[in-house]
Length: 553
Image 1: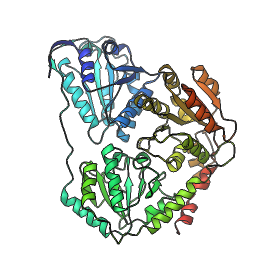
Image 2 (image 1 turned 135 degrees about the horizontal axis):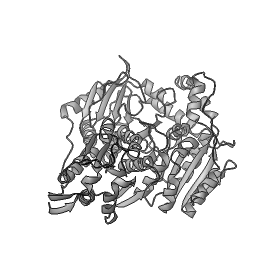
Image 3 (image 1 turned 90 degrees about the vertical axis):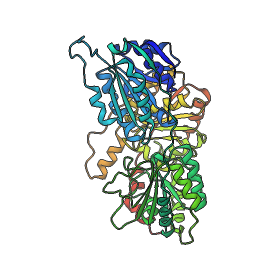
Image 4 (image 1 turned 120 degrees about the vertical axis):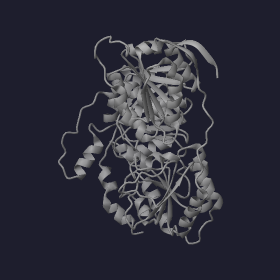
């Protein structure tokens, strides 16, 4: 540990961030951040200036999601800080490590009365894991280290530090930076593992559920070994998509809906769910009932009891270690009967192909999903905004690798697709990345198109146009209400992209999308592809009658 005799507070803050390995700071600086900005200017940390604080927050959260390290974003006081509220909730519910740094007016003297002053720390406390105002320069190293520790420990999430402008310009004396300590998450109790093995052995139709918390490299390997040894079929939540590749012969599919889809014919018939890395913050893919199926909860933390989720056994500890213990001790059970599951799997596989060659125009969602999948390589990343198409991609798109389908099924906010894609491209510059947005969600943060162009990224943005809030229209119609209040107009998306320095194209016929995607990747740069979409298939596919038809298998 190197002792620092004297250093400016803002310089100390930057050095503490460098000490944590920070690569990027996404944000919109303001007057109250100027000392911090000057210290950042001479740092090896890259500032990515965004066009809105919300975009910066989504980028930082996505960086955390993809790397497991804390993404950092910056805003000024007042309106800049309040624009971080949605990304904070996005990271909190989605378990993404993120640090938000905001400025504030001087706290040792009044400079402009109460102008722009909001109690940002109090505002952030309910939606973060840690929120503090820095009042003494000497505390900066400890606060930064503590914030990073809390952000990254399970369950990961957002933290917040407020640096007032008068504190930023002061000197700190006789301080040092804190290195990360060596830690290891505890193993699950061996006796509980034995009880789980007994429950699995006594079950007739166990089914493995993979959630977002299992999306870690060591867990992916441990899950693969467990499935190979036991032969237990598995499915995933939307945010657990890709943890085990969709090509696996025991893969049942993605629970894109809470109930009523083909996959639920298997979930409903299961008598035991081995729930790995999922909690009720992400929309539940099944509902427990008294006297119904049993559940084993495998996670870093204990289960949050809910009316629809109350597991009978909890294996708490490092998930990868727990799975390894299970795999070492367990033996395939002759009493397991997966016949029905495999029949459902065959039905799911068949229905996933329906519509993949549909020639209708505007294009039906199944065809859009198939065309994108045909062009994307195994390690290509799609970043989805929130809308009807998210369900179609969650349901039909086959993910081959972890973290190649970025979607939000926790806060389920609109406006995150494009910023998430920009962050994904920063983390993985050699991979193909596509943002897939509805026209409603895209326009909420469409200004970040300029950010992508300015950064010189090779990025494709698909905008699905239906001139309305399609998912809510579907829900409105399903509830028996007349359509009202959900239609809007749109700009000329092609010219809109061109105005930012990107390339734009409008799909005029079915079959054109694949070629335009391939052309965009070959040319490089930022490309926007406008795709008219026909959502008339929504009702036909998601009707409860289809569930009843399939479940007689």
